[in-house]
Length: 183
Image 1 (spheres, rainbow, N blue to C red):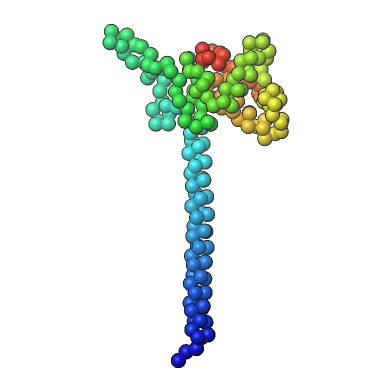
Image 2: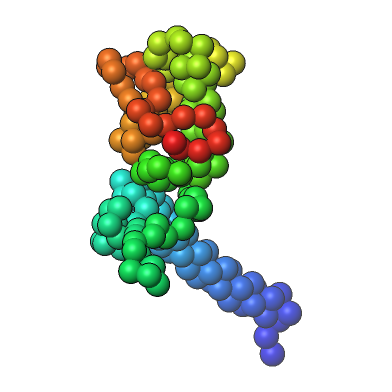
């Protein structure tokens, strides 16, 4: 007849082996999870970058121009489709400027940049640098903040909302006016 201590040692040994097996499996799963998270983050970054590059309407591969936004009316004349602003899905997306596109189509950060430049234009003052914008917004004018503003301003230039008459100096693009609308 086996001793009680011997039986306990056997069960302890079985339990210890099971714990070791589970720890090995947990380590393998943790490593697999780390790889999967890295891949997921890379795909999310890639999707975000593609969204920044593509203007609304180009995401499907069908670039729409002014002719695509007109539809024949019942009497045979062309009438403009909707003049309401398009909703912007992500904060980093900036729609291409066109007549009657309102500023509310942009995120608050972009609207703040446009408002400061509209105020300067109304006062007859010249273009702003990103350093001056950071000071104007009450931000610490550290390089990271200035570069974040520069990135937003460059995106607005690329989409037709701003002009860059001299490198690093930004003003409203021709045709873009106050916060009520784009024209």
